[in-house]
Image (cartoon, rainbow, N blue to C red; front, side, top):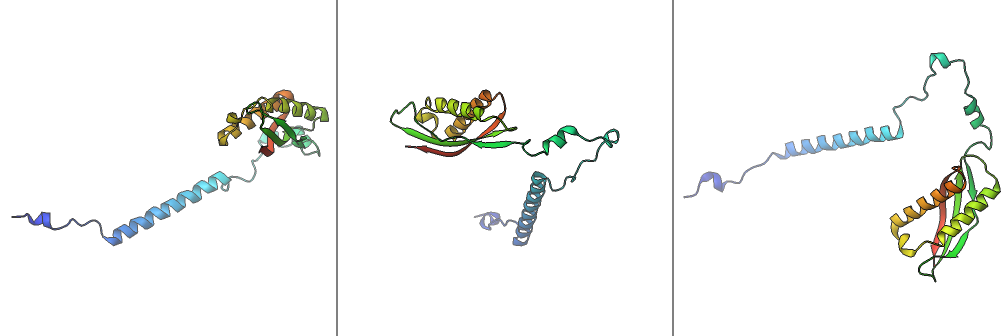
Length: 165
């Protein structure tokens, strides 16, 4: 004879309890998303930091100089770089880049950076720049070379166009 308990299927929680738990979990997820979004945007933070009592009457000279025209970051577009790469030798690259300086620099520095980037691109092999990680490595190498050539004044290299043929 069969046991009566074995014949009857086991029943789980009712649909009402499952629905209530779904609503609770959904509300918790929405709340956590809202809180983390506010944290990342800085929505709950103070609008300005009050000055310390000992610094109340003083003005910051470097901050005033930073608001003068031409004293901030400067974007300089370099001439397009068109050359063949190291391997395969019949592959050509055309790259248009811009350099972000921390302050205005003489035009000769942009030419020096352009020539240095051109010399570097000639040594690149196709397998080094394939894929997203290859692009990131190329960009990091270009930024490092530009920073070295400009004695640290070049803060970022923006690749506007990259074409391989």
